[in-house]
Length: 274
Length: 307
Image (cartoon, rainbow over all chains, first blue to last red; front, side, top):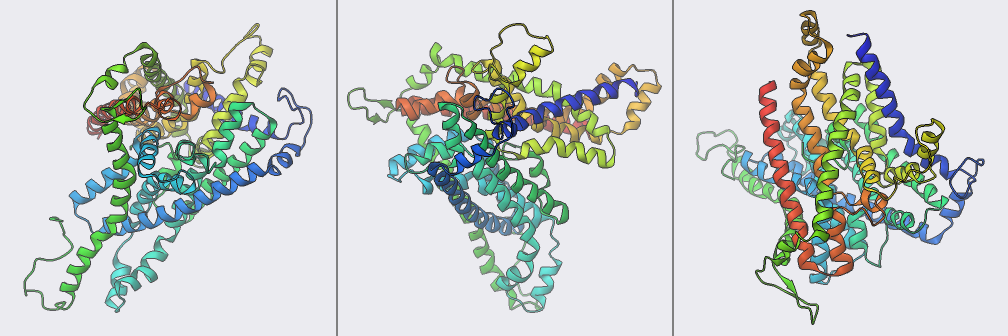
């Protein structure tokens, strides 16, 4: 049994891995393929990248994505650090209530709360655009960041902070000189993940951008709908690289330092409720 | 606040840090301020929009002025049962359930192989499963578009292997959307399965086969029962987000194979029927929460049974 069965499973695993990578590799190959009809390999070219990134719309949308990612990450981290510090000294019931709020922001389908925000902003006359997208991204990004920072703080022994307090440091100084440096890898990893989630988001970005703002993921979706051109593959490869590099960097940091993000690195943005 | 374990009971019995106690009390109150940004954001930009949707879902649109009138009608909810809307709703559940089962069938042998691998090999296999998951969701879905396109690589592969003769059409069909869901969510099934399978002591399997159990019987009587928590966790991670999926049917459905999420957003973005759209959104949320609670109660039971 232990000779035959596992071998079949190994072959199957290899096949599944090939299938997991095939679409990704297809996008990359098409992005450097001379054939504009995307049917066969006609030689290597960087022409589609040059064409895509000289397009003013693509450049503007990349900047929009960057702006949204930066703003939503900063706000999410601030919320998450406060939440982490709070939950360390919170009672069990308050903590359960708070965690319920955190997880519900991840579990609920994004379509639902994005449409709710659409209606709310419409009612309150809040303009659609970068600001509205940021408000929406913080809803889920702050939840992910909170989970990571809570996990890191929970594993942190308070003895160093107590020592600093005994030596006369006030609370702010303890936080600045002891807690925050210990927390820094987790903060960095949380930032990288929220940047990646922000760049890759479509739903909030599309619904709340209106006519004023279009992140690059939404541009890509529109281009796929209109007609697929080789530039789509070039933009897609670039977007893939951004998300992969941020995630991989977060993974490397987690391997080197405790960050409390181990599980989330396995699960990514679509992880729901465990 | 009743459970503020940090501060000792009031009283003069602990003289050494007498100066510190009043301070820690004010700080204790101040420290609850730290929960405020998170709670505030959730209330303003998560609970308020949901509440608004619930209010809208009982209202109606005035057909003359196109303004929303608030009220207490259930007609939006009964409207969901028209064939036009019921079809994509049921399709969402069917696709999500089918994709979850497919992920389980495909993911189990993979997770088993990774769980049985040793050391560096295991780490590499896990990484290989995770890397696609770290790359952009939109682009991976679009990669499927490339692969299953009518004249795409999959077609050429199947053709050259002689498995298909003539024309196959996958893009913009429910099957195509299903393939997309299975592909993008598969790692979410593999990881919890791996965690569950890795915990199983290999000695249990050896004992079973030494006692004469055939491999199939070892799988059914030893491995599967112990893997139940992982199976349920994986099903939650796949089924819940897949039912509310918006991007995959948007890219691979081509407007014909719409799912729940697309029907809901269509009401808001294109048709302007906010009350009906709100009723759809609220229904989706309620159904998903019920499914989630059911699966979680199962998972607690399974967890208890395994432990």
